[in-house]
Length: 372
Image 1 (tube, helix red, strand yellow):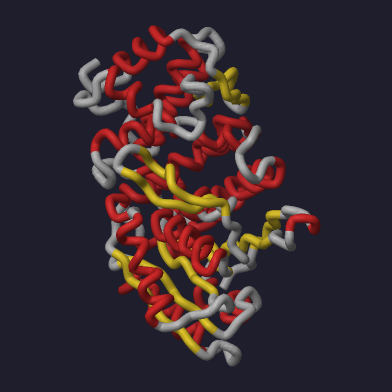
Image 2: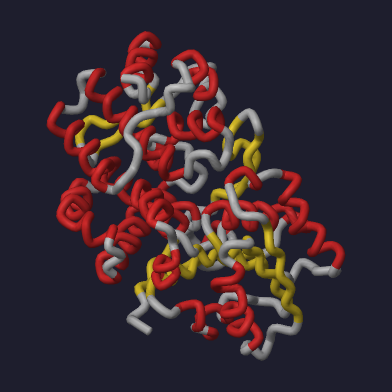
């Protein structure tokens, strides 16, 4: 086991003691003491999916069973995929909790990617009006983004992540060894969120990504450690400053308004979240350049890095501009009926704005579709 990097999401002593650590390292799934220190009660329910379960569920169960204070441990295995991130599937977690008579001392453990983390966290926020949960993200996207910050929820046919709650985990345990079992497509999807941090506020990190993208794609362990840690540092700073996304934290949604429209319009699961965000970032970059804020050179750099990560840079041709804008209107950043976007002034400098002409938005969407 390598050295463990520990970061702190410090939400302050006046907020109910909700600060928590993020652990990043190798071999952490077998680190019983690390997991055990964040389980206050004697009851645990592990929630995972049918892809992750054969890989890591037994390892986690062995670790949990080695803890003397754990007396009850159950599992819930959900189907894998964004299309299953629904209230109906969420009820399977509640079915086990209620059928097995788990009380308020239960700790839910999310073992999987972003879908599992979001659904487990939402179940924890709702069950008996709130119980503890732990994030054990097994995808790059979940390790660098969705597991940190307390956003939980499910999708609705009319909009992605529109039903949910803020509920912070007791800890996040990011074992980079789990990244070795990701498909190349899933790895690239996670890199999209890594690139996002460089674009919105960390130009030095963007430079590092340009120099080390080939190593990340080759799954070089040291490079992955740097990418996960730096991304978590950047996100943690924004979460601490703005836990409930009333200000600076909204910058983390670069590309997401466009991307969520793609996911919803194409059907959940057709595009991976990171793929949709990658294309959405390209659209935001072009919008920024067309608005006269971002230089042409920075636009080219941003698109080139996204392409190097083997990510799509064009939206599907089947979504025309009118449908795109309709879907973008169902977004948490919409205010007083106006679409707001995260756009760039430069690499490393982002803003949230509605200062653009509707005609310009239409032009950029048409420019960025696959037919162009």
